[in-house]
Length: 128
Image 1: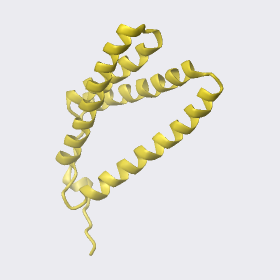
Image 2 (image 1 turned 30 degrees about the horizontal axis):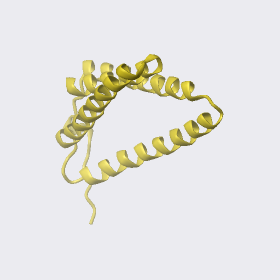
Image 3 (image 1 turned 90 degrees about the vertical axis):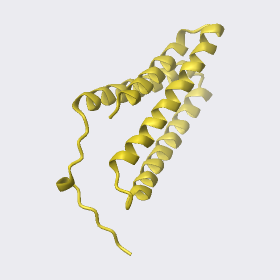
């Protein structure tokens, strides 16, 4: 993984985590960093997919990742909606910050370790 994705995820994680203690001017500046982190991690994800996934299966792989992403968003939305209706808004940000911190650690370890896709490790089967 490239360094840009780890920087984007870490920027997003730090900005979301600081929302808990931010006043209005700091909050507005954090929104800027959230936008940068979000866009850079999306660009890095798409670049990684284009570089590492063969053209024959890129559509299926992208659909799988988008489906998993949608599932995670729906589950988190359901959980956070229940928490907000109970008045636990701060805990929503704490849960989100924890999830993002775990993702940042995974990104850092995978970036340092490096992803090497070897041709002998994957077999492409194209069916008509």
